[in-house]
Image (cartoon, rainbow, N blue to C red; front, side):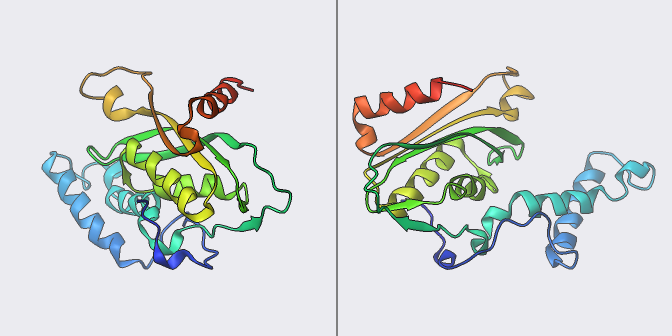
Length: 210
């Protein structure tokens, strides 16, 4: 089941671009980053480029992990499906950035989201916001894919939902097997998208790039 924050109902908050300068977590995180820098044999006193790195990293973490804050969950504005529309609604090539939970290095790519409405439809701007919310935290690509699909399935009660995410992982490209350019693809299915013909229609539309 998707992790839907209880506090999102009626909220109009969007993800923070940066933490407040007075956020006490900045100093807390910076202290640990400063210790890592010293353990690596580096000196902020000797290298001016490192003098504020601890605080810059702290602020960056609070920004890119803002999806951990429940109040940032986007308001899912929905509308009655007055036209009785029951064909596929697709938003594809949605860019995202996230951080690998295993190594704390980035993975990034594009998400493709489709649903077939029943009684409610959702504002199109909300689909990228949902992906961004769950991406802004230490993540697994598989979990990210399921969380986006799960929220739409539970909130809209559509005939079906399908999410496909394509991503490059720097933990694969920079370390370990070191295979630059490799792409990981994950998918999550709900409802009628478990039927082969419906799923293939979606995948065929994805192949029509541009």
